[in-house]
Length: 246
Image 1 (cartoon, rainbow, N blue to C red):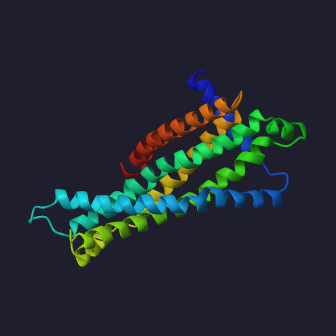
Image 2 (cartoon, helix red, strand yellow):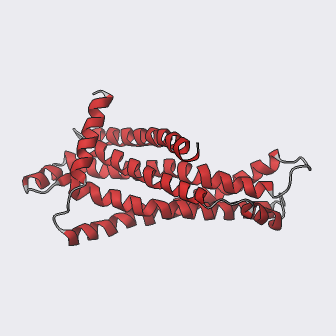
């Protein structure tokens, strides 16, 4: 199946997904469950990844900036810019694509091969709207908070590494974090997080929704979902960076 056929099926599925829910009470119940599954359950891995990521950035910056002519606060400034502009919104999203994307795709793919989706259609329920819309909205609401947490924890990890190994003084590191701060950079990072959230969930649900066969095919669809969403994130990262910052 060529790219244009796949993309057309994807657009049609998204069109079906963004309809009016039949039961608003059930929809909001599902939305809360999905926020817990997609957002809250991901806080731990975001915390761990971001803290180590911030520490490694400080160590690398300290190794490369040993020239006495370069101000000490440059390390804090470089870490802040790296986390906000690229590492937190993009790298964390790529990791979440593996965690969330595979889970979502497997869940819907299993429902497809066990004919649960067919049963919903027979009952007159819009299965795409019923299963996919709560996941997309939950991701759109959760990802900005996850990325904001990643930024703060990453800077905290960098601060800890800088002070524990005496790479730079705490005052110099904090001065670097505050140096020439542009608030729009936070907006830019959150815009990317929302776009990446939509890509991850929509692409993953697409591959799961059209899965065929048995357990092996569900696993294959999950792998395709993670790979495709990761590539889409990298492409959109380039496009958004050029449009917003270029």
